Amino acid sequence: MECAIREIQEETGLILAQHTPTKAQRLKGAYYYVFDFPLTAYPTPPEPHPEDQEEVEETRWVTREEMAYLTGNSGMKDFLERVVRV
Image 1 (cartoon, helix red, strand yellow):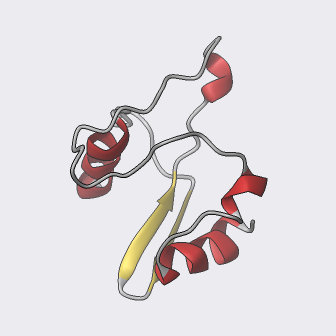
Image 2: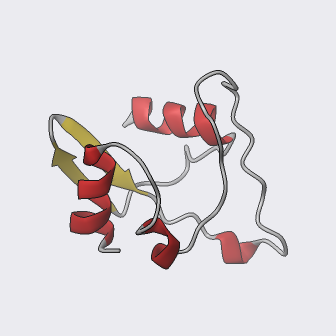
């Protein structure tokens, strides 16, 4: 869990240490987590700012509907279909 939270911070700039995942799923040898981050608590959602500019191509907020059209690896696609159900 510590590694997942650290990766989220490195790839988005968001600090989720006080949050726990609402869902978790092991798929293809990796764990995938869902964190419900309360964006509605902000007048304007905070912009994601990756700490590692070499590893991350793009960051942006998307709706659940938009998740279905994201490109990514097969593990991410399986996670979105099985756990997030987009």
